[in-house]
Structures are given as C-alpha cells and as structure tokens.
Length: 79
Image 1 (cartoon, one colour):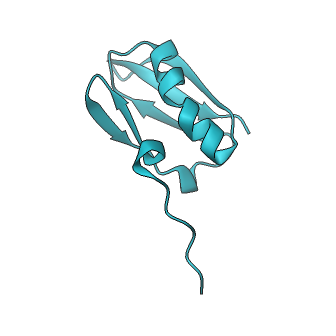
Image 2: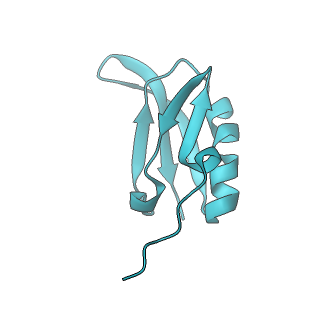
C-alpha cells in the first residue's frame, strides 16, 4: 500500500495575521467549504490560498461571511 505524498507546510497551513490555519486539502472535494473565524478580509485570504491553488491545481474562492454571530471568511473549492 502506498501513501499519498505529504504536502509541504507552506501549502498545508494558511497563515493570517500570524495565526496558522490547518486545512485538510486531501479531504477538500469540489463543492466543499471551510469557515475561518478571522478578521482578515476575503481578498487577503484569497491571496494566502494562491500557493495551495497552484500546488494542487484547484480553484478556490473566498468570501466574507457572518455565521452564528462570528465574522470570518468561507473558502469554497470550485474545481
């Protein structure tokens, strides 16, 4: 049994304002999303996701959201 290759930390973690957010990209299928509770604007999150998009050859979209009383950014995988 072969294991999938390990992702580098620069792809595995998104760092926003010095806080690392772990995102399990292997389980992130098209249509899935994740909510990051952060005060960072969506455009900065989109820029932070750019390396993961290039490395994994996927398309991500970040939008600001207010969910359950918490401001943050939701990241969707489009393809």
